[in-house]
Image (spheres, rainbow, N blue to C red):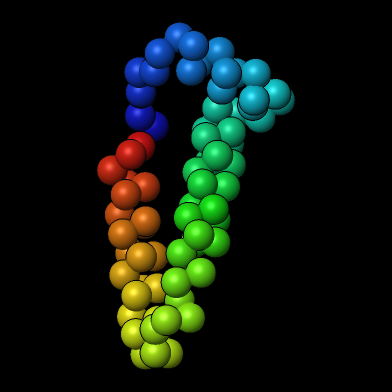
Length: 73
């Protein structure tokens, strides 16, 4: 478990968004949605790659996202 500090306005928005969920669940939903949005945006570029390049690029992106999640929380 970790503590984080956020601005009061952000806290109020997150509290409203979470409803009956925990703060952790609400944050995870937001992160999952952001990750999926980034993937959809990137998929438009995948057609310009060869299949081998696509798989390598997708692995790199997945690794970067996984690493970023660990540093954010």
